[in-house]
Length: 206
Image 1 (cartoon, helix red, strand yellow):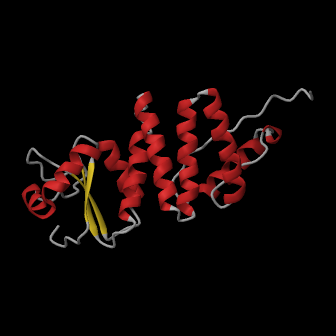
Image 2 (cartoon, rainbow, N blue to C red):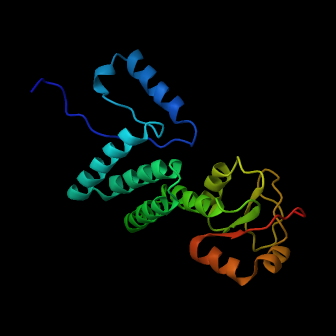
Image 3 (cartoon, rainbow, N blue to C red):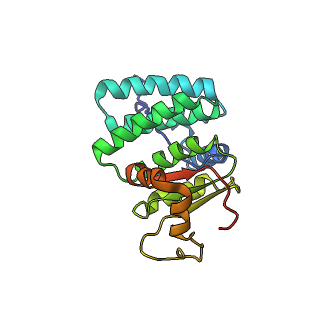
């Protein structure tokens, strides 16, 4: 033993496209506090092969020790790598497994983020459309609004059932009666079951 404490893997969640900045910030902070020796590697999706190997090992270890919350977070990280690689089926499988674990554990803060990632996968096939989020899912709405900020042809709205016509901040909400006529009962069923519904058409009237 060399007296150094055992090092562990940690997963840091960040917004897509900001991974390199976060990595640089961590390295700079470690240096400023003279703690560089406590870090071995900081891996981001741009280092896919190395990150994938380490995450796979981490997942196996977390499964063995029964650390389900950490396992779910590791699965989300794996899904991020597969999403960057364009492997949508594998991404969905990992996200759905992670979501099931978070639901079993009652982890509230991570579920909207994972469900937003699943919705974004569904929207990958849609050039233009409307995404309606259940009024009971404000956290999911916030994550989706951020996730889809770079998709100007996809509009995200928080569904309203009590006649509200505007969201806080002055964002206009579409007339629910018009949305019902266009999206139909299937969209309403999706709102109830998964918290969001996708209507794969452009609605310039909104």
